[in-house]
Amino acid sequence: MVNRVEMENRIIPYKMLYEAVASTQGLVDGILPAHGIPSLKLGLGHIKSVMEDFIVKAGEGLPIIGHHFSFPTEYLYCFECVPVCIEATSYFLAALLPNGSEPYYDLITNWGHPFHTCSSQKGTMGMTLDDLFKFEAIITPTAPCDNTYASYPFFKYHKNIPLITPDLPFLKAEKSYRYHAEEIKLGLEKLGKVIGQEPNYNKLKQVLEVENQVTNLQMEIFELKKATPCPVENMFNVMAAAAQIYLAGREEKLEFYRQMLEIAKFRYKKKEHHAGEEKIRSIWPYMIVFFDLAMGEWLDRHLGMSILFDIFNYNFADPINTKSDLETLFYGMAKKAMEAPMTKQSAEFYYPFIETCVQLAKDFSADCFIFTSHLGCKQFGSVPQLLREALRDEVGIPMLLIDLDVGDARFASEKIIREKIKLFAQTLL
Image (cartoon, rainbow, N blue to C red):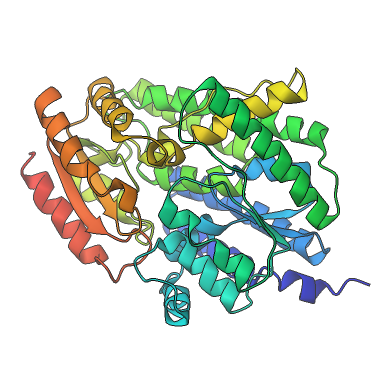
């Protein structure tokens, strides 16, 4: 007989996350007016529902499968399992808990892991070191960066967790997509052997069809953001990033985007901005600050600054063909994985990234860029100055560079970051 509590305790951080989401939702519902920050209200409600489902399934004894964010969560739904995104766990807890994931960063650092690696892995590594996560297996591609990929052997060699590593090539070409497609297929087959299940590709197709519908809705919202004022609040970027992982392949994700599209259309027709007057239109070509959940709303209300999108909100893959054979299916899956946010930018030279940023600045009438130079993203260390020069020369707009750790407030605090942005905004008004 399955011991439900014992099984649930394989994902204690998800139980922590569920309580944090539920508490935050309660505060939001109790404090905000009926139409206040709808993306936050809707997003938390859907995520709470899914987190509860994950905990129930863990209690039933389904395998706990860890994965890197560049191996899309929905691909794991060909199995009966509980998917856990290593990076999303660290940063969502950083957003919702008073001290975020900092105790777990310190735990793994004191164990001996280098402090300057990415905190997106370090949090979950610390939790696993403390036996708060008990994974049956973990799957991660060999990308997007060496700094990330070098952290994953901890799970295999110290915790004896089976680690499956589909190879992800750097070259963007037909042969690369076909190669990675085969690697994804082989990876899922290996994972199935570890957990004692056969991949259910019919179920996978159904999940991918949901994602195809979501992509269409995302593109409509993205197009509406070209309008002035932007009809989508800054908080949407945070919740969309969370939805990408926690709601992947589910009806809850589809409903979230349907609801947000209707709200965006209503504002677009009324030429309304979420928080009054839009004074500055900013693009964040890298990450938002995960440990400061309220920053987006602060920018909206106190500076009139819209975040049109960040790196997790401006990459959309082509729909995956689910009606043909498996070879076609996996080709589409491979292309989506290789074109995923951050994976695409980190697994190629900087030229396409800069060209994309310049074009987006023109298409979306951006007034400025804000580049968060994350401590762990060493592969991007030389890019900001090149991007700043390109934006100045080709678009005539400035860029603010902020050195920080997006998941650890002790490197650059909320107060310091907000003050830098405030001073920068004054130069634009």
